[in-house]
Amino acid sequence: MVLRQFRKGQEIVFQPSFILFPLPHGQAIAFVKEGFCLTNLRYTRQKRGTDDKDRTRVYERITDSSYMNQPMKGDENMAYVEWTDDFSVNVEEIDAQHKKLITMLNTLHEALLSNKGKDVYKNVIDSMIEYATIHFKTEEEYMVKFDFPGYPEHKAEHERFVQETLRLQTNFRETGFTLTYPVVQFLKKWLKDHIVETDKKYSIPFNEHGLY
Image 1: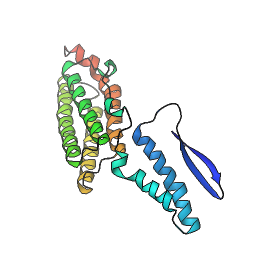
Image 2 (image 1 turned 180 degrees about the vertical axis):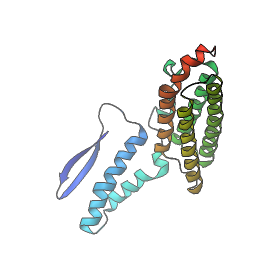
Image 3 (image 1 turned 45 degrees about the horizontal axis):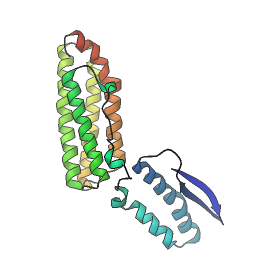
Image 4 (image 1 turned 90 degrees about the vertical axis):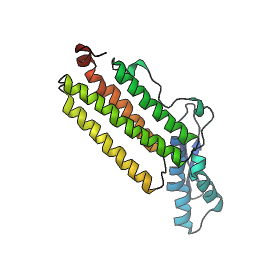
């Protein structure tokens, strides 16, 4: 989906236009929200001094949280992150932990799509943070045991993630656990990047010490 710009009288209007490739539901909604916020609704209020009731009603419908969390057709059957061999670090124990973290992330994403509620969001996020801490400890113990040269940088990356997720956790509690797509996308990006770009650096050294 893109926002197509055209003029209608003296207004600049951004109209959603679907194109051949699909976008994630949350990203599509974000585009529409931005279009309404920055153009139609704001222009109408500032320049005319009055509210366009129809436009306002559509905007409120789009920004309603229950609507935003409704899955697009087919989304509910798709895993948010699919495990592939590209994620493997060739260490069975650690691969199993990575798979569990990905399963938790998929559970969180599915809960958001299905609008399962704050208690579910809280339980999944708390479990992810707790399990990530256990996972990091496993990796770091092996790094120390095998004298892995990248240990300080790797540990620092773990610590930054823990600090960020704890900050998010605090924000959730303060706002009543309002979960948004950017949060889920952040967790997805960090997990994928960390496994592929950072964790794979210890694959060969760990294997050389007999750890598979």
